[in-house]
Amino acid sequence: MRSPFRSKILIPCMLALGLASAQPPALGGKLYKWVDENGHVRYGDHIPPQYAKQQRERLNERGIVVETKAAAKTPEQIAEERRQARLAAEKKRREEEAAARDRILLDTFTNEDEMVMTRDGKIEAVEAIIRVTHGRIDSLRQRLANATRRAANIERAGKPVPEKLRKQINESRKQISQNLAFIERKKVEQEQIRHQFERDIKRFRELKEAEAKARAEAEAKARAANP
Image (cartoon, rainbow, N blue to C red; front, side, top):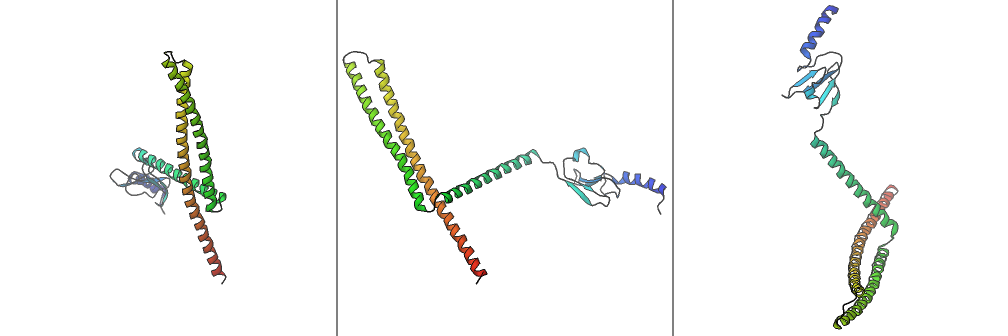
């Protein structure tokens, strides 16, 4: 049986020799394990400040690891984690948007012919706007020709062209230019409609083929389960 006097002497000695050493002292209370700058394993009842940010472990009285603290992340690691999180969020957003578009396609159309008719209807609606705009341009050009002719007659008569007539000429030219630019934008819109429906029809075909394949596989499994 160990005497109380001997225990009182032994424990301080163990603390003095064991803490912050390469061997874990078999004592109660908190005990930590870390690696110093030379790669040596150290033990102690507290973590020295210079090692507070690196990985460390807490051991129980039998020297078994009961808790591990990961090393503090560097600014570069934190920045990379945030970048990866942004990429993952963006990928998830794109996937969700793609899934939503697929649902809309399947809910809106029952076959490709419907999609072709819808596409042609949209293109024709834009074409009608273009025709109306061409008619407006013809009227503006006629107005411009008349105004220009009046201005030329006035100049030949040796008189100054009235400011109101000059403004009318400039305004007609400006409106013609704006309407021509509008037509070009509408033609681009028509091309965008064609390209969008081309992609949608292709995707619709893929979705329908996937549905048919899944249905065939399910039917095959059902037949195999009930021969």
